Structure formats: structure tokens, C-alpha cells
Image (tube, rainbow, N blue to C red; front, side, top):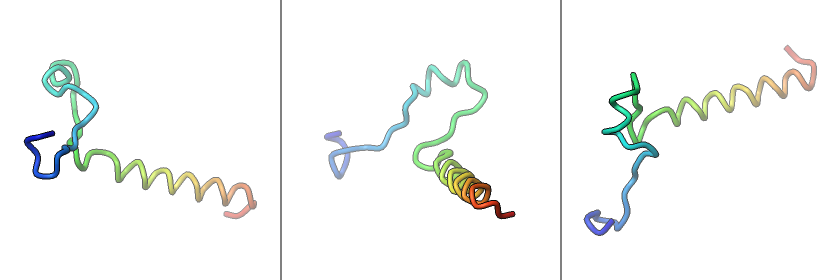
Length: 56
């Protein structure tokens, strides 16, 4: 993006103007649900390891 200080910009993967007409919620970029996705991935990985090794 030539208008950006660094030549690029961070954008989401939806058209907000179109989505807001049909969606009840939209998460912002940056921020959004990324941290929650990482937390749940770690949780599921640990849970899988505990089950694999028959631990509680």
C-alpha cells in the first residue's frame, strides 16, 4: 500500500461493509480471535498428549 508508512497494511479477510448487513459480530484486525485460537490450540495439544500418555 503506497499510502502506508511501510508500504503494506494489515487487512481482514472480509468486506466489512457487506458483512455487517448479515453478520451479528465481526472481530477486528489486528486483535480479533487470533490469541484465542492459539490458546485453544495449545490446550488441545496438551490434552492430546495427556491422553496419549494415559495421564490425568
